[in-house]
Amino acid sequence: MNLRSRRLRLAFVLAAVLLLAGGSLGYVLHARHRERPLRQAAADASFGLEEPGLYFRDAATGRVARQPGQDAARVTGGPSCDRFHTAGEHALCLRGLPGTPARTEALVLDRRLREVRRVTVPGIPNRARVSASGQLLSWTTFATGDSYATSAFSTRTSILDLRTGYLVKSMEQIPLTLDGVRHHRPDVNYWGVTFARDDNLFYATVSTGGRTYLVEGDLRNWSAKALRENVECPSLSPDGTRVAFKKRVSDDLRAPWRLYVLDLATLREHPTAEPHGVDDQAAWLDDSTLAYALPGGDGRAQDIWSVPADGPGAPRLLVTGGSSPATVRGTS
Figure 1 (cartoon, rainbow, N blue to C red):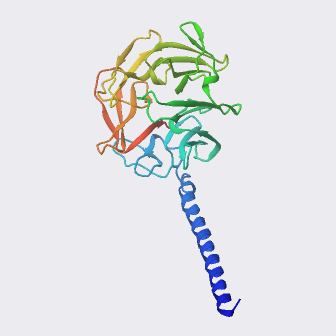
Figure 2: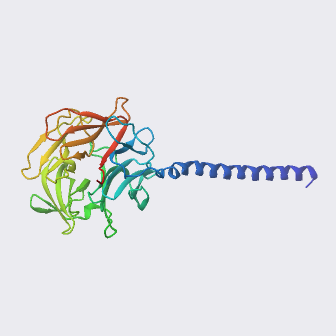
């Protein structure tokens, strides 16, 4: 091999090394850039759940914010979440992870919004609930599809008991009684859990055979029974007497549901004064007021509204560009 050939070969080798090095550097920089949102997802040190107010996911930042009062400016600085809920001593933050297949990270946080536990599950973040004590948490993800309004979806709902550390990975394990008979079907789906104050009784939606039902569950006895049909995303009132839910009233996929309230003692229901379709698990601000998200004026971000639970009255805008509302009350 002559000198010119050796120089050409050396130049090719050097170019290849530089190309590989540049590619590795580019990959590292890309990985760092990709990890940056996760590193910034933690709450600011000064932001916690000690202050009373309405906590929610801020659409502009994707982070949890607080609105101290109706006319007060929102305070930002919470963790990045796709779904959020808080009660008692804990909060639950759901956020989708990048890549395919879809996965969700469920973060259990304390009142300073510091991580207590992390669980990764398949699917897209959808529903989050914390019991009044903060000791029971539940989350729902879409395993396939992207809407309850279609039949092409499958859900996975988990329950985490912080008292024991036990995780129910899928509620489909819970024996279901339907019309007084033990129900066995492969199409059973649960979603939208809400807990009673005793941290044992719960309510949820179950779907099977093309129908949806409100179920009452008992964790100690490991059982669930259907109470009535056409109830989705229940939310138990603070006094434990009523359930707010979305009821299918139309086959129009643009607005198939309306927001209703069910009296558990009589199983009688009534619509709220909200005239628009509600695709949300409503939150009780108190024993007489519901909060929920509706599509905003821009057609993309959501706004948070409230409405009286007893039926009469009118909806009221609480937060522009927000979702996942949860009330935190003062300790005094």
